[in-house]
Image 1: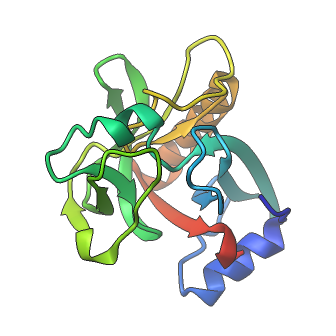
Image 2: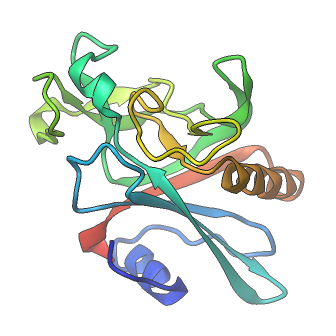
Length: 195
């Protein structure tokens, strides 16, 4: 993953006409998908960017924006494994239960996904396979106690943080933001090339 800073991210959002939310704790949640989409590792990032006292604060969390190897080979959907299409999804998530286990950011509005149905290790992002709807594409963590190194079963299309401590910080920021701006969170997924 190439290096970037707050300006790189805000410039990429502006270039693609994606919004940037202003105001203290008004969260901009941005995924950046690595060029290496065949890996079964947390080689992507989730960026949380917001303002505080007129300064920009950025957190960069190791994550995956791709489904793990298990679900690439064993799709949950007959149409194929879900891979989120890069773009901006306004108000797509709210704080809520992930698999009835713990609170995460859970999908409440439609998202676009590619459907990869050849059941191999590689990710196929064919525009003719794009599907749109409510598929349970959540933003959650992998393990509860340790940093995860392999994606495997942690994602069937969800956006997943590798480190539970990073996830705890994200959720604390989300709760603070929700108390000020309401319960919905937008998500922008960029590719490494877009930076």
